Image: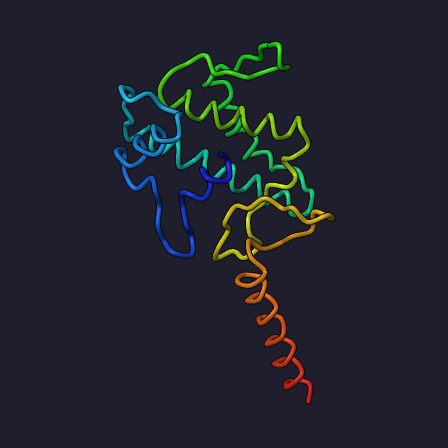
Length: 175
């Protein structure tokens, strides 16, 4: 769900599933995160955009095993507080549920999924493409967790071509 949420904005194509309040409400509702009667206002839309891009930034930190930057952690912690996340023990283990409604609850559900991924050890495998023109979220299934691009055939190939071109240009300048 986190990957789908981050990928609602396609940087390369210049599209955004959250282009307005109605589109945002539709997506959140379609994914079971928002009740039909809960409105999405302009402030809510701005908050959804902020949390989505903050999660994208946190996924970028996963490339090098770096810490999530403090300013991003602040945004995520604020979302957790706004959602009033509560941990409950159930027969199947533990669950986290937001104790609020509306968009704060929807974002709380996404942040709960993020925290659960951290607890389960799968968070580090969720990354965004190393190509700054792409930044598509993907799950790194490689054994060494070393994947850098959403697709080796697309972004990986582009990066390797750029590196090769630079080396050729530098070689021409050295002659």
